[in-house]
Amino acid sequence: ELEPARAGPAEPDLRGVSPSAWLGVEVSVAPDADGGVLVRSTVRGSPAERAGIIAGDRILTLDGAGVVGPEDVVRLVAARAPGSRIPLVIRRGDARRLLSAELGAAPDASGVMRLSFVGAAAPRLDSLETVQGSVEPDLAALRGRVVVLEFWAAWCSVCRFLVPTLNELHARYSAQGVVVLGITMDAVVPATHAVTALGIEYPIASDHSGKTASAYQANALPTIFVIDPKGVVRDVLVGYSPDGLLRIERLVRDLTAAR
Image (cartoon, rainbow, N blue to C red):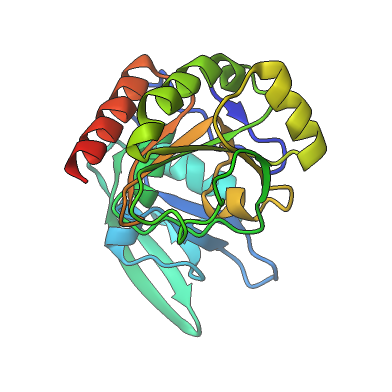
């Protein structure tokens, strides 16, 4: 139900797992020999953010054990239960700090994305080229309208399966000012062929540079965002979920009625 985007690293597939501990931090191997792992980002609202960890910090120890790679962080967090408190030593600049994080239960992929984006201003749509439709792929131009963004690819089986659902959403709400916009990293010509072959009826844009997909962290396909008329993200759905699609349609209906 969830396919990794081929141009970037896939998020872990957390579907169907029992609740496990979660810190909510993305780390990478440090680029030098000073030790620890480098924090690339923290999920908004996550235990890591609440503990005061920020991008650029270096985690030196976790639960009293030294860490030298991302796998150490995964292993040490997984050994604890949700709700437990775990000590960390980080280095920020030249200073070392002792922090403590209360671990949460690991959300699924959609949950992580909702924490990261819902309630925040939607990232700009960068370097998009129109493949189909007369909609300008620019959020400033779409301000005042409800926007449903779908990140998809022709090779993604779930994306193909969702085409009739999004066609119906487009047919039902476009007259009320709702914009359904599909974004693919395929270039314009192959994207045009895919649109015709799949019978896609809503506007499509090419993100051949990958800048927009990166800004939206669309590392797994399909990923659907709902953006309200003020440009604020109101929901995110990753992969296929009947309940999630019903939630998306209810939200679109409610946002449209509130305009």
